[in-house]
Length: 254
Ligand SMILES: [Zn+2]
Ligand SMILES: [Zn+2]
Image: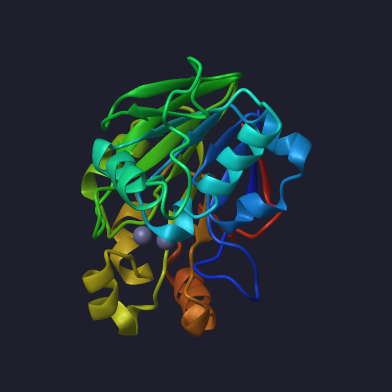
């Protein structure tokens, strides 16, 4: 199974699109503006969306994806997330004012099937398994573990340093890749704390516990401090890890 980054930025404009990962051909992990790079055929091939939390940069394209399925009589989407996340979407997106309620059943069918889950729950994928992981953010939030036939990828979602997340992922024997948000540099630690994000220095102790040769992908860097975050990560990252910045088009084989 391949995981392709469609969006890996904290905001739109240069350098790109907000958070969205395509796992295989039929599953999205988060649904930020990166989802807008998919063709109609790609969108109709989607079956599931795994959400980390309700914030717009991770969910904003879901209403428009549902619209494509509705307009082309597609199969519709199973949407997995915490109950609070799905409830926020229902109240604020799919309320017939902002957008049609595509979760409503019509003629026995709905275009969005809301599937509430909790930490530890699993979702079968075509060629693997997804597991909801703990996260700490200003809104109820998850990370995701994506296990393919050979390797496993952990994705933090938006999160302040979360000991339970790192304890979990360091116990996955097939773990080879971690995609982790590092929104701000260390000088902005107070801002990061207020917004439920991470800085390089806060992650150092967790990086030391990752399996040797694991690939650590940094994502969701605020464009105002991109240079500083990259420099601080390069300084802190243990030599036995491979450090890269996730960007649109990055392909990870699992
Ligand atoms: Zn967020
Ligand atoms: Zn975000």
